[in-house]
Length: 358
Image 1 (cartoon, rainbow, N blue to C red):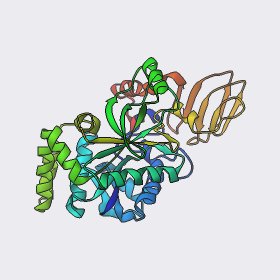
Image 2: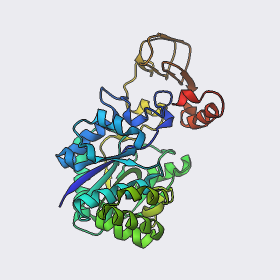
Image 3: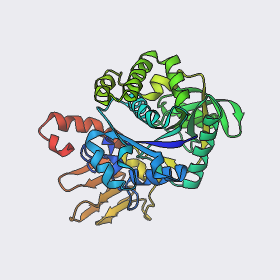
Image 4: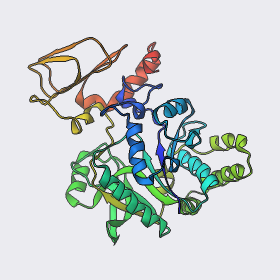
């Protein structure tokens, strides 16, 4: 049975502005080391498939060239361009239809984000391969849940049900971004895992489950598969645009009775905000993270990124701040506000500063 990996690379990652822009989203940035997050994700995927031909990337049409330039080993025909960004359910359904048209519905697929950090690739590949074996030998949808290390308000959670095998649990329900008090209770119970957005299943299982719990989505995907099998690819776009924009969690996983979860502990982080970098990068003796040219005095707990500028940042007497210096704009904010950047970007877009977002 063919095993493939689908990397989701269509997001804009606006919370890493001003380094991430419409023309250079987060997954294409080299935030950790010399490789971009997409390139690191491709390397992990290669550890699962062993072959670039078994890796697919679904992304926006405007990012095809960027994807091609960053992943020269990836066959060009394995870059799947969404006709339009419509959230993860249409993206996964559309990409799955294309993969099924080439490989058949018996293929097993591991779907994963391309903009997360994984510190232990061996443990990551072990968890993915375990989930693939479960999916291949059953009619189950499988997801990877991350064992929480802290009460986190910014992540979704999966409640584990009964143990169904080695490192395998029934997924009881999904909980979206709980308040701190509830997240603390989840952590203490030991029965909840973070939702990492990693999904594994056979394409035939995906198709039958969508038909059972999401009939409207299923009808659209059946039509897309028919058009592809008939060689009428030019008609697929209009059918894709008729699909409701919704997440795969909401459209499918929250309603599926055949969902299992494999716990994973491999140094995962979704690095969703500037403040999240302090969970990944080493700090100096004053708890500062400094990238690029900066002189810092009597300052503590700051994140300073000056890699894209040739000017030196001098910081004196500041605490718990984020300073990001891009070539055309500098961001200065408190750490506690870093998750609310979308509000700022909306204001900039409404004003006369839309060029700063491009």
